[in-house]
Image (tube, rainbow, N blue to C red):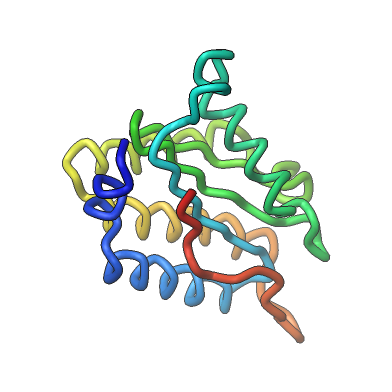
Amino acid sequence: MTHWQVNHAFPHQTLIAIEKAIKASETKHVGEIRFVVEGALHSTPLFAGQSARERAIDVFSQLRIWDTQHNNGVLIYLLLADRDVEIVADRGIHANVGSREWEDICRTMETAFKHSNYEGGVVSGIQAVTQHLTKHFPAVGDNRNEFPDKPVML
């Protein structure tokens, strides 16, 4: 996908809405959410057969989402070319929320994306992740923000 197509799916106002959703979410728990959208895989990982899941794990590592105080960082990764959503959760939250719950959130988001509802899909996905984080990591005391809330465009 071209940069134009990515920017068309995620215009400035949509990115602001996503950032606000993350900011609002993180007032309810001590977890950290990052949203990353990538237009398409570059040729090397593509030809090597890298899956969206493998790429999401790479991005999780590169952005150091694992490096949170309570081991409760969550990456919501979208490979836009495939409309494939992957959620990667750090060991603290993954121990409490199983793969099935994350998969359900991903499939719901992907359904919204098939109808070109990118903003609604991402915001509803953030809200669903928020429910899990609030349950297992409710906001207590000093709830400092460890990562920027702004979406990452790769």
